[in-house]
Image (cartoon, rainbow over all chains, first blue to last red; front, side, top):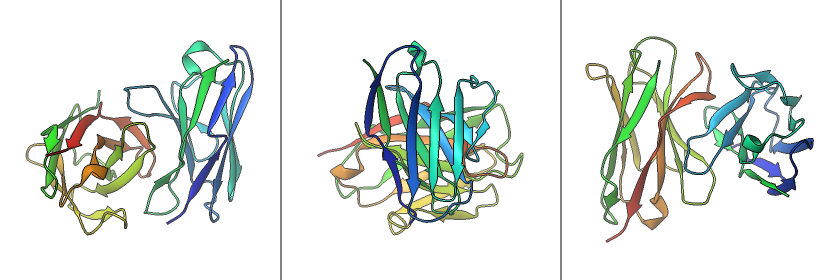
Length: 107
Length: 120
């Protein structure tokens, strides 16, 4: 299996801040990297697919970058609704795997 | 608009088989190049993909669960199902069904999830 490692595991920030979350794959996955946001008690929501493509309806303050093994999710100007847990997911392999998650809290 | 809904028992005894159904509405399960998936999340933990199925019945599974998981599809009822055998407390989780974007393996439409507790 391809292992996905996110950092940090948790993060505190304020409304208006810019934050970055990293995701590293145990082997090259080209650009087959996706990002999700999950709020408590809810299903995950797809934010970004193919490393940098914004899913329809997702605000432009979310962006993704990277290729190969190292990827980044950036949120500029944090809004109150952005405080949640973020997961990366590789879709390079038919054995799909997720990162362990990054919890973003209000400072 | 596409809607997915999980259903099934909320409590399963250890060593028994967990069975869930995902009912798809708003589109036909045969409508396109989609491998419909099951993903689970133990309380307070991360996401684990369990397996996916095409409307033809073609499947692929998480290798760590492959010996215990069967996913099937019923196109006549627009549903797909999950069976997980020999469950233990470690299988306690919220179980989600989901559909990926067309021809891909990233999931853009999810059910609300259903909590299954394994306990005697």
